[in-house]
Image (cartoon, rainbow, N blue to C red):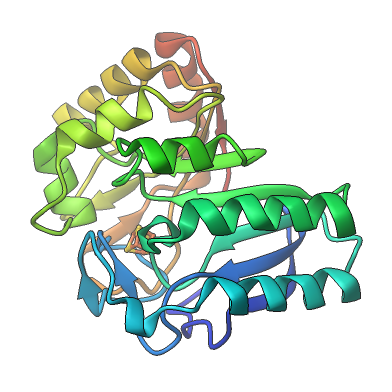
Length: 254
Ligand code: SF4
């Protein structure tokens, strides 16, 4: 898989994937640029255009538009397996994220009661009570943790200046039924070995997530010098980390 084009609409798909089955995507971010509090070296959407912990509301979809589109899509596809908040950056940056998540949860109950609500978030807002309350609405709140120390965070996730490592760990520690997603990479930036790997394992041991899904990336990524962790090595890391943390760790590849 290479660099993906940005989503051009609020609702997209449904897309079939091994992880989520038939999944309807919800994009609360701008359709014209990528807005994220991270600029991960491996991001499949390429470089972050606007790196911030806040959003320019003028470029974001209105709650009413989101709900209208989700309602129409669920009427058309009532048998989707997941309704997944993802899209062109970090979904929780939308100021109305909690309100929209609650309303989409109600729409799901009404129109697609078998669908699960999923979220991909980078955890940079998980310390905020209003975001954490909304996370409780999700069946699958999947939060990113690629680093176990601020230096690796800076190297791999390249966060916005306002992002705080302490806030990320504090927030993750308070999410119920926490599911962590970690992308492991090697090469010029690595979290798959050495001190960075040890710090990541220690942070997982401290957080005690319900489940951890580890991935690597595929070529090409936005940055040169980033290498994929091969499937057999990912599997070995999953087994070692499971033993050391007591968490269920699953290695997956795209
Ligand atoms: S957090 Fe996700 S969307 Fe943002 S830069 Fe990283 S991989 Fe891309």
